[in-house]
Length: 355
Image (cartoon, rainbow, N blue to C red; front, side):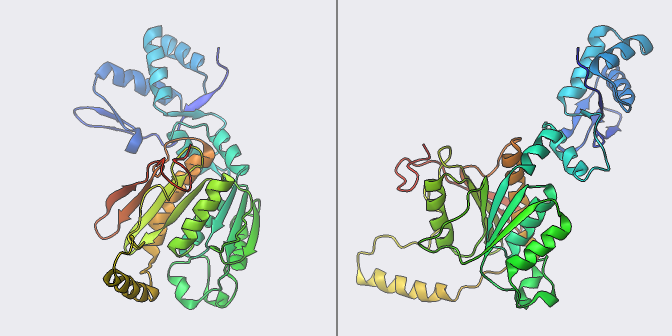
């Protein structure tokens, strides 16, 4: 006999038209067409507005509503298995009450997810637009520890997308100001800062549960990929290509492929066999030296937000990580969702196919 008390989750809404009853909305939504089933489910839902155990609900439906025990059990199973119920201990005034609703909606135990997040350490490499958004999201989600790595100072041109900085911060260290602002939002977490430029040959990074790589340049990602595989550090690459918000691949050494398993960029020279090819690549190099990425608040926010979903799912151990073995891309000019496959490649010189 279960002694756990439940309530109808606050995110559950009900709709109805002449054809069906709609239980929940969004990914939660199910249609109930049978009139008797509608009455049964509504009776259980209404009476779970106050805490009850499963057994108490079954007994109530039998005595008060005159349903059979089998029908009462069906109603209980329907609501429980459809993620319509939450533990009665839910407190809407708790700091993490709103994320708890999302975790429950996803079929996870909110208390367990929050406990896992509070014990995780995330390393963020690059604290510009992407780093601002992701660090803020993770800090306010209750991640136990963040380590911020960057070497840059704040420029006035950063303010269009690096939303935790102000005009008064111009010329100051990005990671020092970012730490200050994050602690204003959640003083219970630990934040370490490392002032250095990543992508160097002798880079050493602290141990962590996950790294977020958002520093500029393919070389930074490539070098960290090798380091991560060697040192068994899961990581996700987040950024943008022109007007495409990208996140992934999500690399878990020993379980997935790595970013070197597939060719995700076209700016790496193929084997040069002629003087003509050599001249072309020299010209390409000169052109690309002055490249400046178009960057606005929207692409930074989209890439960061979608990456955070995968990060929270991984660290909280629930749901499906969308960017495993692939780089996801959201084209901002037409909202087309695209992806590049990055499956394990046994011929990969870095990870050997992830196994």
